[in-house]
Length: 372
Ligand code: SAM
Ligand code: SF4
View 1 (tube, rainbow, N blue to C red):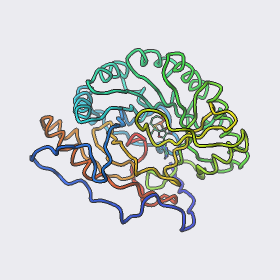
View 2 (view 1 turned 45 degrees about the vertical axis):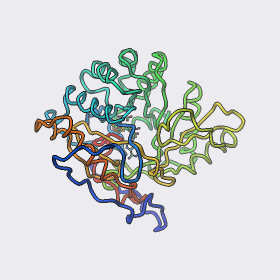
View 3 (view 1 turned 90 degrees about the vertical axis):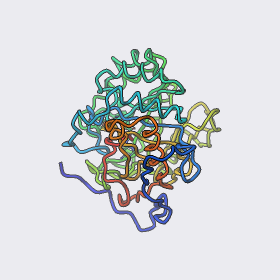
View 4 (view 1 turned 180 degrees about the horizontal axis):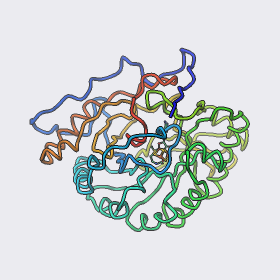
């Protein structure tokens, strides 16, 4: 399928982190001792959170995520359940406390409910959560909750059924809404994720209507929508034509529709992620989250790693470099070898991404292959 480039922005368009702050790629640690704290990165950021991709396959084809004719990895390259469990056990022993299952679409992995039950029992993990497109949640939300899943973030970019179908190339809004409601009924904590991207031809008024519609949809269910600034993965290619919507624009639209916003007070407990929350001054229970990776970046607080479905450990979403933990396992490596490989990846964690809003400086990989 022919791809589009993002519109080229003026030269002062912000880059999150200057190129000069880039640290070297991971160095191999050989057979030496495991470092004392493998999850402490060179910038004194402690890793507590792992995004674990269960598959690179998906039943949707969102325009910002992958091309229609994407090539998937051969199944033999995917980590087996036993390999995933072994790696998770090591990560938890080293200090990872929170795991988010992602993909591709995690619910299309065969046996996902059984896997969740086994992962939920890994000693040391405090929290197992998932990000899903919601399509299979009408059937799976109850079993997943019973297996030990605590929460699900459902991706929903619009509540307009036609536009949803276009953005996802095959999505069924009614099923996703049923999935969200099934997740709430099953007792899962639910949040909505919306990538802020306007298709070509969409007027400003239609963009505003989408933002407002998502807020109303979320609030009617007692939940929250988090708008995610589009990140130019895939070397800046976009598999449909569109333009970005910035965090500032989203706040302005919400304030114009519902009244003034103020920062929501920090939540109790450890920091959960990059979303910054705002609430209506006149209705503080109504919040909006903004994940502004591009215009108001949050790399300084990054506490996460990403493990792809084929076992590549990415220390940063914004760079292609990765360390294969699957190769370590399949070469017969013991847990110390796995820990050394994890430490090598963490020691190469960059200060931040170098995405430019024009699409330059980011990874060539598709979002779907790293896991979002
Ligand atoms: N299939 C699941 C889903 O859609 O929720 C999980 C995987 S998806 C890759 C994870 C998240 O990444 C989704 O919320 C999706 O909207 C987001 N995402 C995908 N491509 C993106 C991009 N280029 N910029 C920002 N977010 C993106
Ligand atoms: Fe699939 Fe999620 Fe990517 Fe959409 S964002 S194509 S649902 S993996």
